[in-house]
Every structure is written in C-alpha cells, then in structure tokens.
Length: 359
Ligand SMILES: *Cc1c(COP(=O)(O)O)cnc(C)c1O
Picture (cartoon, helix red, strand yellow):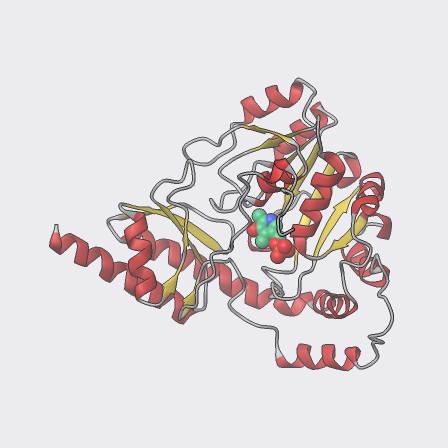
C-alpha cells in the first residue's frame, strides 16, 4: 500500500504559519532587534556553557532562571513559567484554556498566531474587530465578555501589527467584571515602558506574556515567559512539553536576562529611531503612518502590494499586510539600524516619486 489516511479534519484548510522570510539587504519584516548581543555578554555565555553537561536533561521548569525573573518582578517563582519562545506559551494557553466547547475572544487585526492556535485546539473564535484607528471596541468587548461564556482572550499591547497600546483602565474593568482568563501580550512592552505587572496581585485571571526575542535580541534562541497567578501556572505546567526549554537556551536566556540593564541604551536607541522613522514616513505625501509604541510601524500607501514588491527589488523586506482583513493597503516596517532605516526611507521615497511622475 502506498496511500495515506488523512490527518485530523480540523487541519483541513489550515495553512502553516509562514514568517515569509526572503533574503534581503535590509531585513525589516520580523520585528527582530537589529543588534546581536555584545561580545562580552557572548563570552560570559560561552564560559557558563563550558560547565553544561550535554548528556543530562535540563531542569524542566528552568527553576534557577524562573527565580531570577521572579525576583526582578517582585513575584514568587511559582508565578513564572518559561517557554520555548512566547509562541510556545501562547500554544500552551490555548491547550489549557481552549479546546472543543470552549471560546476564545480575538481582537483582529492582531497577531495571527492566536487564531491559528485556536483552530489547532478546536476552540471557537469570536472576533470583535478593532475600530478604524485600531483601538479596541471596549464597549463591545465588555458586553460580550459579560455574557460569561468566553474562556480566554488576548489583548496585545502594543498590538502587532498596528503598534497601539491598550488602555490600562479598560483592562482593569474587564478583569474586574469577569473570570475570563485575560492574557496581556507584552511582547513589545520594553519599547513602551508600560506594563500591567502592578495589577497581577489583584487579579487571578490576569496573565502577562513577555519574550526575550524583541528587546533582548534573542529571537534565534527561543525564550519567552509568563507571569500569572500560581493556579494559572500550574495548569500550564500540565500541558507543556517537559523539556521544551533546552539547557543551552536556559543558560543564554538567564545570562541575558541578568544583564538586562545593559540593553537599556540599545532599547532607547530603537525608540529614538522609531520616532524618527515615524516622522519621516509621514513627511512622504502618499504615506500615512500609524503611531507606534513598539519597534515597528504600520503604514498605509496606495497599491501597497506593488510598493512592497518594489521595496524588495531594492533590497528592503517589509511585511505585507495588504490582504489581511482590516489592513488593506498596509505594510509594516520593523525598526532596523539607522542605515537600514535610511535605506528603507530612500527606497520608498524613490518608488513613490517614480509612480507619481508616471501618473
Ligand atoms: C514576537 C511575538 C511574540 C513571541 O515571540 P517569540 O519569539 O515566540 O517569543 C508574542 N506575541 C507577539 C504579538 C509577538 O509579536
């Protein structure tokens, strides 16, 4: 026999997540940090790795690393969970709080991974689309959650790909009005310097998600973490793969996290570059950029698909959202190095001038 029984029917029509990577001179499409870690930090990591036995399984929960994160956030180790990137933790949340007969409230346009995880776990997705300026339809969300049948929801703040923050008082109102698990995805929180951390002690149903992939330059290593009530963490521990955070990643992640103060000036530089990029984008008459509290900027331009192709021809890869519902004619540019940002602005200006002269 050379035939194959079909996979589970809930995978029908589901496409794999595609980061749409293509080689480019300026890679401004994945919201990565344009800098790698410093040589001195790298040397510290290598030194620590020399003491690592590769033949032994790692500590499943990375307790030493959990302790460091807990202390930095004035929490207990039992309130921290480390994952193989924030993405693994998002999947664990869907496994633990989703499933058949369970409901997830989504606020599109937002990170596409959430809806994908819901589909994988057979969770019903209820969409409450954002308003035209990408702010959350707060009244609609409060009233929908008030019905009492939403098991979990994710508020991305700053939102990816739109860049705007959610209002803290709205989140508090939501937390107080229901027992729905409210995940605040703060993957880009370090670029906005706001966090819901201070609200954790008052709300068992609040979960914060963070990652070392963006502000802390570790997208290639895969470390994310959750801060939440111990009861939430204990449920997540039941569904997680025991050894998903390997020994090497534990050492790298912990060393970087311990040295996080040394990233502050790098983060400040990215914020300054973002603000300059936003100004420059809005100086181009055909472009309208949305304000951002993250390390990327969403912008609108006519015939975005064509503009995206022309940018790529000039060596600049940005993310094309023009076929995403609610984001027609939108592209997202990640804040790169000063040289990359200048290359991007020059290419975009050139493309749009060229189009204008042909029109
Ligand atoms: C990047 C990102 C994450 C997590 O990324 P990891 O690399 O898996 O840690 C989570 N949420 C959002 C919105 C992101 O953009």
